[in-house]
Image (spheres, rainbow, N blue to C red):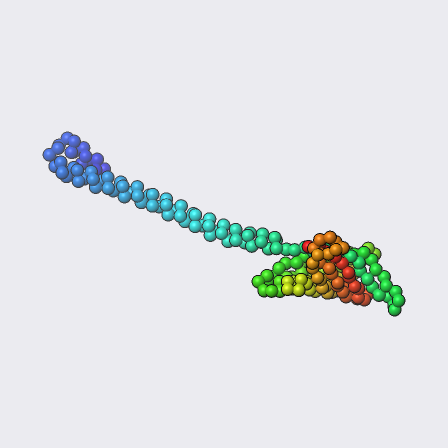
Length: 202
């Protein structure tokens, strides 16, 4: 209000302000306006930076977690083996059936000469209708010997505990016509022990 009165007074009575005073006054007003504009821009810039920081703070850990999860999923290996399961009955009797074995493994240490892994699941299904499910275990790939050793724990259809002890040798198989894992394993159950002879493509 005071500024308006002064400006009006200046227009009517030029002698109230000298020319130099008018210029200095206008410059101060313009400078004040520039400072106000700069402050607004600065506030906008600060808000934008904070918003970006918040987005990055949320998205980077999420992206890292997703990458880790994806990498873990990609590293899971599944073994599919086919062959026979044998059980010795008495001194001269041997029963056997066709069988399919599936095991999933998650690498835990690939930096050492022995590649370590955990068994995370699996099933053994035999032609006589028996099914065994494996839920845990561990093993190692002995790269220098081209061998695989593992032990897995699980249950049968009645919930009884079973243990699978497996040893395998990988290389070119004339029988399969390609690189394969030749498996010899022992299945320990409440009803006795079984022997598995199988072949798995790798």
